[in-house]
Image 1 (cartoon, one colour):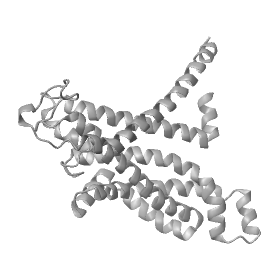
Image 2 (cartoon, helix red, strand yellow):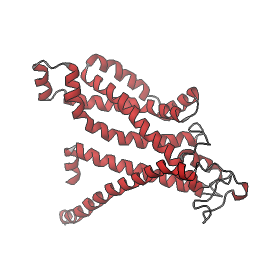
Image 3 (cartoon, helix red, strand yellow):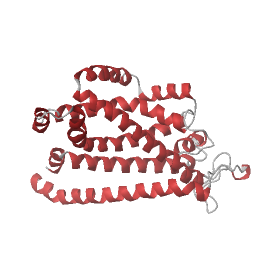
Image 4 (cartoon, helix red, strand yellow):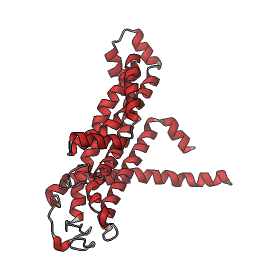
Length: 285
């Protein structure tokens, strides 16, 4: 009876997975369009109007207004740009630096001893505390936030790439390349990196999602992007003291933030299945 029930539910599960990925892609496309065209078309939403402060959603202000009378809809749409930029640039920085260190650590034993000990030291510090410390030292701004979020993520990516490269270097084609006298840079660029790029692309999705959440957390704590530069994090932060009176200040940007992170994670999970057939087979069974 149980086996029969599982067979009946299997097509439904596949259908849900088939819908989830295209829907996630459409959501991300819509958010990217908001990030590109929102600020030029709507502005940044910094116009203060005390008469309109803490107004609920209406035809005049679709997402209501905040404590300064600013339109939450405009700030939410325009805030997508900074949140998306933080996610993409952080993912790029982490993948380039962390991925390179991981490849070198996985292939060279002496690099492994140095890089992994440094990674252990950084990973022993809570990421949010390290980010706050870096922002306090470097000052505010979008670039500082990207650096502050990237530093805690680099050792995690380096450790992941190291484990992937350690398994790749034991494969027969690497041994064959070494035996025919191929140079080390050629082996790394033509054999190791192309076979590790799949897992690195999966890691990119999780780093991007973590960076967007990290920016929101830093802005919520008051050490992220400046208040006059809207992002989902500081829009949510502006409503934390008025949550009982005006929950819409937090609800709308918080919902978009959650939907974007969920969509990125769904795509990352699908990529992981794509590059790890054994995991996909276990899920299917």
